[in-house]
Length: 303
Image (cartoon, rainbow, N blue to C red; front, side, top):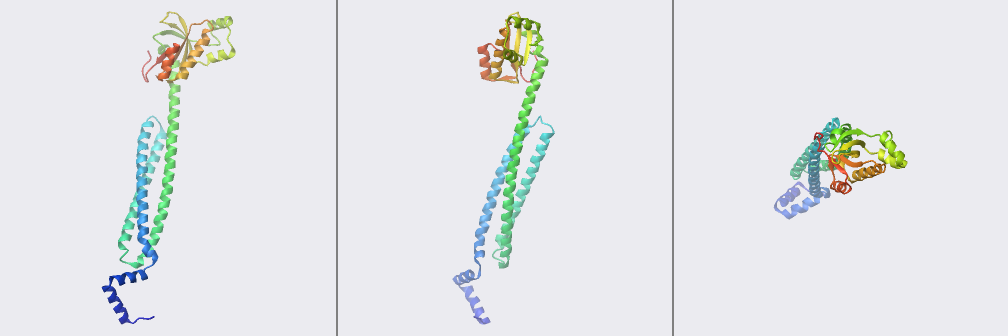
C-alpha cells in the first residue's frame, strides 16, 4: 500500500506527539538483533571484567613467585639469569594483554555511546563483538600457557635447589674428610686413616676374630675410619665416622652398627656422626647409643 507525501508527514507529526506510537513504530522497524545488542554488550563487558580480575590474580601470583625465586636463586649462575629473562618476558606479555583489554573497553564505551545516533553502525558493532570474543578466547589460551610455563619454572627451581643441596652436601663431606684431623679435635687427636683391608692391626685382629664378608663390607662403607687418641679415655680408638651435612636418625644408626661390628675384633671402636645440623631425633638417639656428635656451624673454622 503506497502513502502520499501528505500521509507520511501526518504520520511523522503523530509520532512526535505520541510516545506510545513511537515505541510501536520502533519495535516494528528495528530488528531483533538490534534489540538484543545491549544485552550482548553487557555480557561482553562482564566477561572482560572477569578476565581483568583473573589477570590481576595471575599478576599477583607471578610477583609472589618472582620474589620467592629471587631468594632461592642467589647462588645460581647463568641459568638463574635465563629464568629472570623469561619472567620479564612474561611480565611484558601480561602488560600487553592489559593494554589490549583496556583498548577493548574503550571501544565498547564508544559503541555504547553511539548506538542511538546512527542505525547503520549496528553491523560494524556486531563484527567488533565477534573480534572481541575471538580475542578473549586467545587470551584464555595465553593465560593457560603462562600457567604451564610458571609451573615448569617452579619445577626447574625445585630441581636445581635439590641438586645444589646435594652438591653442598658432597662438598662438606669432602672438606671434612680432607681435614679430618682438625675436625675431630680436641677430643680425638693424632688421626690416621684406616684401610679396612690393608691395616696391619686389623689384619691381626681379623685372624683372631673373623668377620663375615657382609660385615666387612658394611664396615668398609663407612665414610671414614680413623685411628686416633681419645683424650677422654687416654687410649687408642678406632673412630667410625658417618659424615653428612644434615645428620639424621639413619646416620646415627649406621655409625653405631658399624662401630659395634668393628668392636667384635677386640678394637676400641667409637661411633661418631659429623655434620652442620642434626635432627632432634638424631641427637636424642645418639645420646642413647653413646654415638659422638661432631656438629660444626656452616663456614665455622674447624676446632
